[in-house]
Length: 616
Image (cartoon, rainbow, N blue to C red; front, side):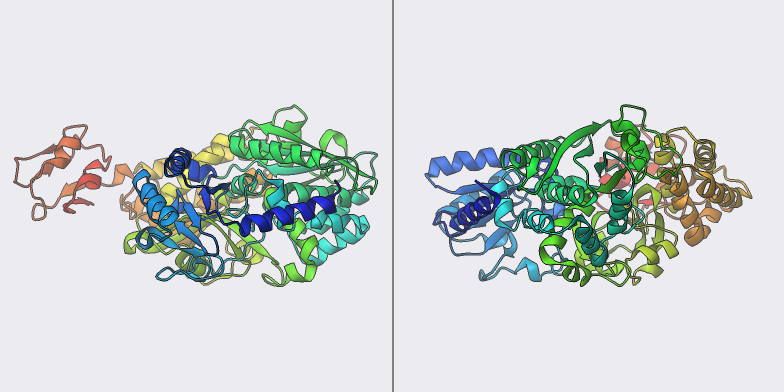
């Protein structure tokens, strides 16, 4: 069966599934769904369907992006829209089965809304709601929609049409199409993808390599993992197109071993491609031969840097090397190599399928297309989002993300992970673009977006990220190895209430030197959190150093917990939870905290139901 026949068969099967007179039940089975209990819900679903003698299609899908609502169970009755149920428990699932699947009546009080065409009375259409309406899903277009282990589902939704069209053109035409689309690398600095491919194609060498960088190591980032779990074929098809364009026959997916589900889905998809003749020799009779290997990394953050990644694939220690020569000329095993990240490859097939002008129609003049973000931190609706470039930070935080929980105040956003900067509220209406973020002192990075509220200490935040990068450095170059250590030491002293006059200036001097002198991107960007927090929140540093006060009420050495006698009811809950017996007082009488015994753990504040525990 050739590819055209497979596509026709897949479309037939897909249409039959959509027209089936049996209900369809979609289970969010990505890592976020499984962590929230999706596996137990599936076992319960299968058991209760059998007990009620209900026949239904059960479809496991990846993360649709609404991680805040997991576990998600969606029900689609024949001829009806897909009803989305969020935060499903065992009890709720039984109610959904009895009412919706058996009684054919949606449970409105448990439903978030509907997906797809049509309307269910009393339920909003989620595509028109705050979370999904601002989004444009290209890299994530199949996540949460198809079974990632079904090549049939992928083919039915336009899968491998991009590869077919690429193979009908010359490699240079494919590269020019990528240049015209304006797609820039989604893993860091945003270098134009098409130009990167052209450099590798034009490099001299009898063999060339292609590498997919899936070593996603930023704290709070899960974009690449979600794409690979929810739509692995999109990434693999993009890799096939890139390989054809640059003239290589072997590729590696470098993925951290901590992503077992993504690795499993990748292996399944690669096996399906081999069986369908989309990997191997003479693909589609075009004289193009290609194979993909998986390399599991040990989880070193520095291996996100492409030369360190290459060293790891070669079997060496993951350490960066000086550039030039660049990987495009001398990369893996000394051969010309091209490295792109997961999200970059996930966009490629859609560009080939829909055209360069279509993709360039999204975003801005210098930042075309869309960008996925892992929206985390102090935000009401954390999850995975894909929005057009140029959207404002305010729209992402307040429209898509629902704003700050409990009516809190937005303080800052950390973009670009531990290598990025912290942007204050004055940048809320700034367009999210490569150049605007760089001008503000941050980076786009791979797409981590951590939101902070008024209770975040910016000095402590800088200390946290410097701790991470200092632990993850490779040790090869002196500026990064010793410079970040000294910066971290100063930040730790400041947070411990031992800051000194001149510490701020020393941090700035060290940070500037490290950025200039470090060997790789990890060291060159490691000072960003400290430098941007000093730039935009210098008053907090000064409060720590000169006033011995933490405005964010976070640094233990600079705060104390007290009990408001007028608000305290003497319920004794805080006293029972205090591990150091620092709280005393009789029942139904105001309590007090012994400051000598208190370790500032904050448990008393967390368990108090009357708001009587205060932080000074």
